[in-house]
Length: 298
Image (cartoon, rainbow, N blue to C red; front, side):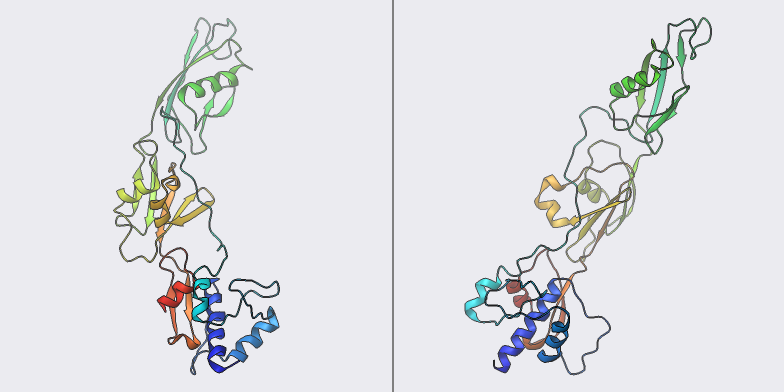
């Protein structure tokens, strides 16, 4: 194996490690990249080394492949590496029903009608029991006398009325319920970074989507490399790229009260060393870069 082939194989070993997300931390390279013998000796002690005849044919004992770069192999490199990089989960679009839906922060007024003479809810001679207006809690519940907390968020007003009647059966079997619903004015979504105007934005209408909120917040800030969108909902974090949201409308997720949205740059990179002609760190300017595209970038 001649020296040129040795350097080419070393370069592609380092390139693939960069594509898999590995980085060299705290290393100084006063004489340029490490020698092939040094790199392969270190790798062999951990994983084993494979010199393959087909690009991307991953051996079972190694997490890299050494390839000789020739003109004949360029079409192969156009599809290499054949691997799925870890991705964060993302939510598909799921519109709310056309009618009103009760959410945390909304107000409801409940009136209970009970014809029983010995009702626990009504005073003697009274059949109508109006309850004070209640705000739906952050957990989506309201409190009812003799019943306790009842969850009504995510329901239509009619379904919430039926749910309250079911809960009252134990204490007032003949009771009927009226319910009046008023959407809250303080239900918000936070856009916390990576946009022109970060802040809290009220959900004045149902079925607002991530792209709707980003546009309202001034759009994605210029200069971010391959912007990545993060949606924080409760204890879960979902992620995708802004390009994928534009390309696939089904990924433009519907936001919910309390969601937080963050846009940040893609932090992935790959390295060029050895026979590449330049030693540099190259950021990922889109979600996926093949080895052939990486050579062009270098």
